Image 1 (cartoon, rainbow, N blue to C red):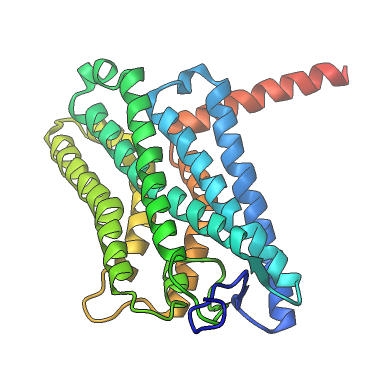
Image 2 (cartoon, rainbow, N blue to C red):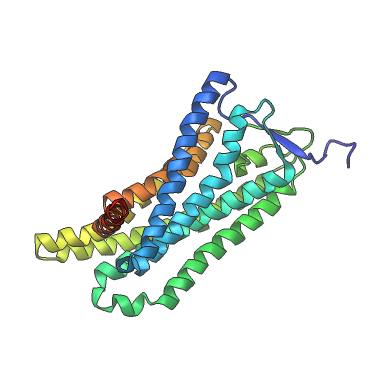
Amino acid sequence: MGTDNHTWVSEFILLGLSSDWDTQVSLFALFLGMYLVTVLGNLLIALLIRLDSRLHTPMYFFLTNLSVVDVSYATSIVPQLLVHFLADHKVISFVSCVAQLFFSLALGGIEFVLLAVMAYDRYVAVCDPLRYSVIMHGGLCARLTITSWVSGSINSLMQTVITFQLPRCSNKHINHISCELLAMVRLACVDTSSNEAAIMVSCIILLMTPFCLVLLSYIRIISTILKIQSTEGRKKAFHTCASHLTVVALCYGMAIFTYIQPHSSPSVLQEKLISLFYAIFTPMLNPMIYSLRNKEVKGAWQKLLGKFSQLTSKLAI
């Protein structure tokens, strides 16, 4: 097979965002700053939830998992992207490419399922508050979280195996910022209709199915909120869901707007922008959204900062 048209390659070349040196240096500085904010913000949220006993609830248990997913997803793509901004030869080995595709697909799928799980949690909190602690017990929360991780990982494993079994011929230039699924499929020198069908099925299972569950949950939530008599009660119920609803709108909104188009598939530029959105912008914004729009998180921050201030004062004396 090494001498015919169907050859395997040991490394790939990522074309990235730009070939202009000044532009790449500017993007390096920008994305490095955003990546550091992403890692710091999500780790602080996870640490805050760990330290404050008032946040030891199902909602914040799921939020901790979301923070871990966000940091891991960003780390699967951004460090390699930063290195390539400053490298003359933007090469990624076959093994690294396989690993990057697997982890990015897995973590993306986990996040979509996890957001649906969090929507169910908010549904129970608003629509059946008296039985919330009974329904959302520790065992169920653990099973739902494990389901999110397992479903995303299994889907990613299947997609990765199928994709990297395709012969690449002599083409090893990936017109993308990472080893993204569609970009890798385009390198194949055989018919990829079965791969495209598998990708469509995957989108339906791990994107549209969780989205429909989120939609159904929020239809019931909004219906319940509208039945509340007092304005203060409606406002309190809405604030219970506001942060999660904002994150859902960001994550699902971009994916559906870009991929579910009636007359065209996403362009290569759109695919690159989507990857950047999910690798950098969403993970960076999520901790900010939960910090700025959630009274419990803001209260925990104030309590933690107060303790830190007292400790600093004692040490100064």
